[in-house]
Length: 250
Image (tube, rainbow, N blue to C red; front, side, top):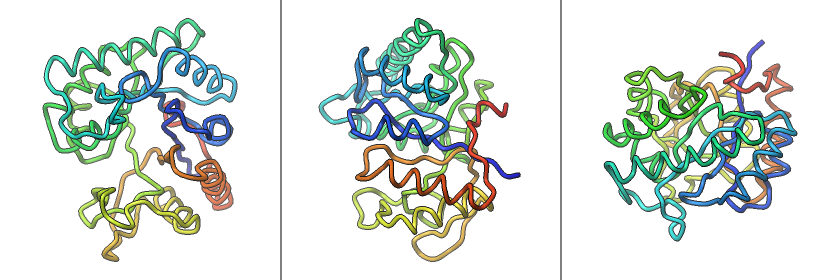
């Protein structure tokens, strides 16, 4: 039986978190860089624990005003220290609640930058390697993120996106371009099924490309995110795909 993890970025102030935590199998919790504070971290963690959802850290550039979406916002040791503080804060709150972090996934512009930037990817991987509990590293396969995970001996969770359009080279269509985010549920569920069952997706030029996917991301900040997530889960299960956190399969 095929299986796949469904993850969502939560704790960012959006209204769908509680519903999403009843649908997804993993969540990535904002830990104070681009969004979130101690109260939202604790609340999201409690709900994740209640729903049996694996929780990971979602650190980003320390840019609350820009929601971590400004490319190249910070680098070097200053970025390392900020990311360490973010992940450690969430890990400490999780420990107080009797839980641990299963993975780390960078947020927004940091994620996009690190896909092609060896130095940035290495910083995030180093922070992950030093985090308590030996969390896995989540990111796009075949990129600098995976290479950095390999260098640091980290378990790697390959992520694909059900609600984003792909270029023929396997990268995501820039959000600045029309059609970058799929708005039709039928398109999202078709893409999710292709990724989960065949590891393939149709790029915007019509090419069918291979995309490695251990986990599928459903963005929690899009309108109707919970309805989209429910539709994705229902369709995948109707095709015989079991929804199960990747970290529980290691």
